[in-house]
Length: 377
Ligand SMILES: *Cc1c(COP(=O)(O)O)cnc(C)c1O
Image (cartoon, rainbow, N blue to C red; front, side):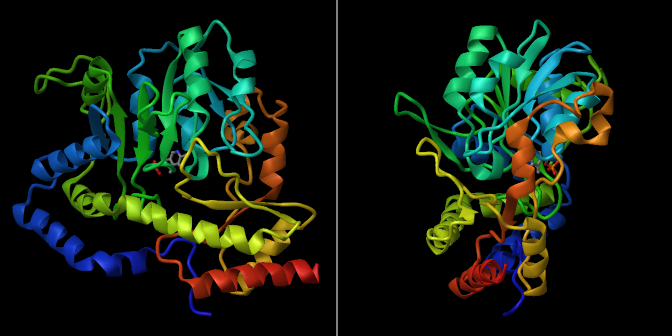
């Protein structure tokens, strides 16, 4: 079998090469590499796509989260509730700003923060909740927003893995993930569902005042040129990245469909395999499958991972060590915190190749390879 990729950016580029090359060379010809109409156009297009009042492009998804937290005016030691089962950026920025991450366990089906466990983690110092729409499926935003409202907390959605996901509220209305909380943050890292050709990120909000603050923070705390009102940072999306994103954004829904189609194939292939639990599909959330992550029962996951590598099938463990067990958080003494679902999931999840160009032949080979291992073991 030819080279199967976890994420096949080459094949995707080949399909849009002409448009992308043209958009990039227009930026180079203009020499307007920072700021300018290409950024503005992408910002407007993303606002329209998301149905968000304000989009603030920035340098990457980690900065997006950092700037969002900075805009809330929190004080050292204030607490932010977040899952431990996530990419480290979500929790790292909390600690970086002198805030305290308070880890809450996740739901074993959705992999997202368990709303039933949030209230027990709220203290007098709790100021915000940062849910993560992990692997491309929304956290239970209706419940999270209810809890936040009741306790006067801000909500920052980490939407880095779920851009394009539709969330259906209890009243039947639909929102894009990232636009439900006070602020939504996303990443355009190349392998994300809407990836650029370098680093990029964006923040969105419907709140005029927060938008104003975040634009300032991302620009050295500056509103009037060379007058700096607050300590900010420097975080920009550059024009070449915006040009690539401008070509890809109109295709995002098709990309999500292609991912769902691959996910459907896996679902069917593993439907009668007792050792594999396929991803839960929450009827409230239209999964965009940033990852297709199975849970293995009674199988040596790490051995399967190695076996597949030998067969030319990449697979990844997202994430082998949850945040609360990372050395970087030793000062919070959270290593022994009981997060049973999180700890259990880290031993049994395995993500399979997932991208927009997966062919039936490849999917078949991946599934047959996995089944071959299960028969053998
Ligand atoms: C990728 C990712 C980020 C960070 O994005 P970068 O652009 O790499 O900084 C944050 N949170 C989650 C859940 C991610 O998957």
